[in-house]
Image 1: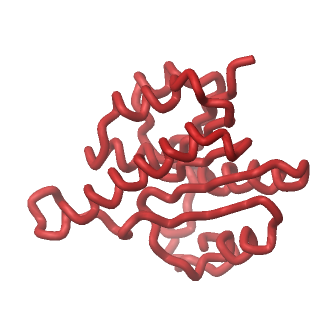
Image 2: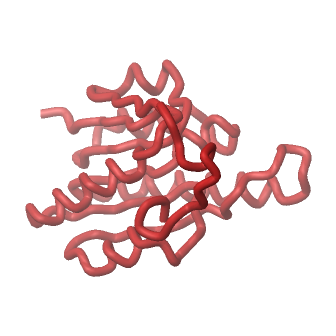
Amino acid sequence: MKPRTLIFTGDGKGKTTAAFGMALRASGHGQRVLIVQFLKSNAATGELRACAQLPGVEVVQMGRGFIPRREHAAFPEHEAAAREALAFAREAVLSSKYDLIILDEICGALLRELIDEEAVIALINAPERTACLVLTGRHASAALIAQADTVTEMRCVRHGYTEGIAAQKGVEF
């Protein structure tokens, strides 16, 4: 049976939350989970603390945080980090060590042209792949969506930020 590919995308809140929910479920079934965070770099989030207590769940943050414009001097560092994250993810996919691999914010890395879309599609279609893949991030491309068997688009109806509500521990991080 071909391993599943799921995408959580859209401008609404909940893409990473949905993926981490899948990690929780997989851990509960004794499965091995790897979460590779392509853009995020904050080690003080609640989901990282919780996952550290879940058996079989490994989270690796490889991002550098907020991505500057391409012409900014720090952009190449972000690009190198995303390429390193993709190489790390590829090695994990080919290892058959995990049952579920979450590529958090990979769509954002693609959107900002930090990594090559064809390389991501090749990873999805790797004949050696046995793990379920979950890709998250805004603006998943049509080509990426075509590779997935399940795509969920989160749509923002209203967000607390627009009402002046600051990010809250346990809600946004």
